[in-house]
Length: 140
Length: 132
Image (cartoon, rainbow over all chains, first blue to last red; front, top):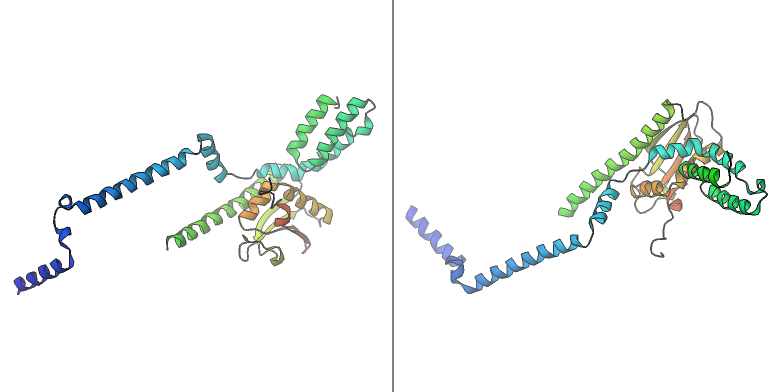
C-alpha cells in the first residue's frame, strides 16, 4: 500500500515539475542566466539606493532628522504672552522718533521703531531691539 | 495591505505628537505660573472645534485647540484677543498645529462660556511656497 502511494506521488511530481528543475542549476544555461540577471538587478538596486542617500550631505541629513524631532519653544511662547506687551509699551515710548532732534538719530530711531512695531508680540526680538536701541540711540 | 499598517502606525505617531504639543504647553504655562512670572494660568486641551474652519488635515471631532485662561476674574475680550494674536503670530506653531490636525484656535475664559475662536488656516501663511 505504502509503495503504491509512493509511486503515485512520484508520478504526480514528475508530471508537475518540469525536467529543467530536477537537474543541477548550472546544468541548464537558461536558469543560470536568469539567476545572474536577478543578481545583477539586486546589485543595481542596492547601488541606486546608496546613490540616493549620497545626494544629501551630512548636514542636510542631520537637518532632516532634527526637523522630524522639532519641538516648539513653549517657554518662549509664555514669555511672549506675559512680557511682550509691557516691553513693547516701554520701547515704543522710549524709541519714538519724535523724541529725537538730530536727523541721523531720528532716522535710526524711525527704523528701530518700525522693527519694534513689526515684532510687537515677540519678546525675544524685542529684547534684541532694546539692546540695539541702547547702543544706537543711547537710551536707558 | 502594507500601507494600511503604515496608516495605523502614522495615526499613533500623530496622536503622540498631539499629546506632546499639549503637554509641553501646559508644562510651560504651569511653570510660568508657579514661579510667579505669569499672573494667569493657561491650560490647553483638545475640543471639537468649528466645522466651518475645517481643512483637509483636520482630525474628526477633535479639531479645536482650546486655551483656557484662569485669572480669577472674568477676562476682557481684548485680553483674550491679545493671547490669541500672540499664539497666531507664531507661524511655526500655527503650522505645526495645522499639520497635526487642529483647525480652530479657541481662547476661553475660566468663568462662563465667553471665548473667541480663529481659523488656523487663515494665519498659517499658506500658498506662498510655489510662488517663491
